[in-house]
Image (tube, rainbow over all chains, first blue to last red; front, side, top):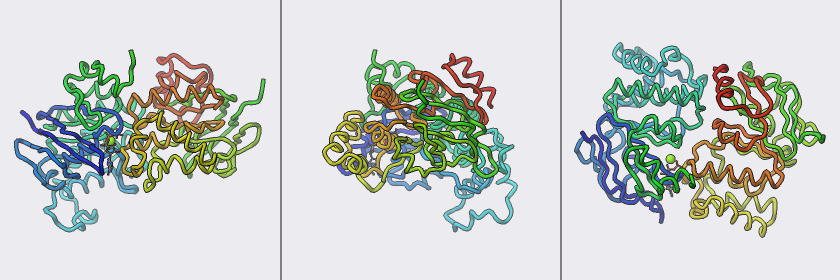
Amino acid sequence: MTLLEARGVTKRFAGIVALDDVDLACDEREIVGLIGPNGAGKTTLFNCLTGVLRPDAGRVLFEGKDLGALAVHRRARLGIARTFQRMELFAGMTVRDHLLVADRAHRRAGGLPSDLVLRGRIHPSERDRVDRVLAQLGLLDDGDRPVDALSLGTGRLVELGRALITEPRLVFLDEPFSGLDRIETDEVVATLQAAHAERDVAIVLVEHDVTAVQHLCERVVVLDYGRVIASGPTDTVLEDPAVRRAYLGVTE
Amino acid sequence: MSAPLLELAGVHAGYGPFKAVVDVDLTVPAGGAVALLGPNGAGKTTVARVVSGLVRPTAGTVAFDGEVISGLPAHEIARRGVAHAPEGRSVFATLSVEENLALPLRQAHGTARAAELTDQAYAMFPRLGERRAQLAGSLSGGEQRQLSLARVLVDPPRLLVVDELSLGLAPVIIGEVYQRLAEIRRLGTALLLVEQYVEHALGIAESIVVLRAGEVAYAGAPLPTDELSQLFLAAG
Ligand SMILES: Nc1ncnc2c1ncn2[C@@H]1O[C@H](COP(=O)(O)OP(=O)(O)OP(=O)(O)O)[C@@H](O)[C@H]1O
Ligand SMILES: [Mg+2]
């Protein structure tokens, strides 16, 4: 069943058409790749779909309902989560604290920021949710370490954990493997696959590591200059001459 | 044989009690290209930062063109002809693309030459030309990387230290940047390439140094990829 459907999304910045009539659909539990050259509009599309930016035209449907102008946190409550192109972890805070804050921020009913403060008791149900995510991501041994002490790959898993703890139906991942070496990438890919297999979650993945995209996505959508230039099964699309020219840069 | 352009001898470096780099020897001949490989956390970036003066070695020496440069401030090392194309993005967010390119080039070469070099940058990265008036801070992640690389690629130093060139770049751009690296090498620039993507680096480097937990695990001619993987895995 279709979980997300974006139709005709258009976004302009001061004379630049960053997104031009873009359609994107994602089924329940599907992993869709979103690829394309630098500046093609991938992050902008994520911003439009998560409610950070208001598209100039187009509609976004989630579980068949039009999201309209719904704010970021309201979309999050419906089950839409994301990670960012630049890692945003708090130095000094432990892995566990990151997940706990994400959990509380998601659950509070518009309460005070002080609700997030880590002093005070941790509710057993909170502990259970945090432990479940830590276990799923293979992070139980790292739970009490400050995030600054982690390798880049483990830091990426914490970001992912922060998204997963909100029990999303759909996660947008923006370049989760950038800066990771081959070994780390393979590990994070495997962990992501395992977590996906255990959960009812769909993923839209933006990534320039084409090998990782091939491993994770059966289907990809290619953006170039804000337009969809190809979409379909990953291997077929990567053979498409227009995609090779615009994105892969392979000339033969 | 002439003296190497860059020579690290017995270099140690670290952050507080953490020893990131232990007793590293490394040389780059004039006009040569050396790839510094190894898994994340092996100390590659620290070595790169020691060379350009961003990190002071705790022991050992770095010599450039026969003179000891370790201990000199980074801007003095840069003045002598070492450029560091950093990991991450380093652009002035509140200046336009054009200003980001032209201002430092004007300072170094005067207005006329700076204009020529800026045009070369646009030929190399057409996207930057399309966006010359845009504020650099609003560029996409990969566009900002292109901007920070463009400046050193049109104005090649004697030694270019490139750290994680491929970060955030689309494959088509990575290919173009490597072509340009081969070109500036022919023009006489020596290269020290710090790379995750071993295949790219091996296409251009005639020798490699593999780091493992801060130490040199191998130095010499490029190895076949399966032997390299063995070295990398042993590091984990
Ligand atoms: N606030 C803004 N003002 C002007 N232009 C913008 C703004 N934000 C984004 N853009 C432009 O919109 C285009 C799309 O940017 P976006 O960040 O979506 O690209 P991307 O596909 O994520 O690229 P990358 O692979 O480099 O991350 C880019 O050309 C960018 O320069
Ligand atoms: Mg982006």
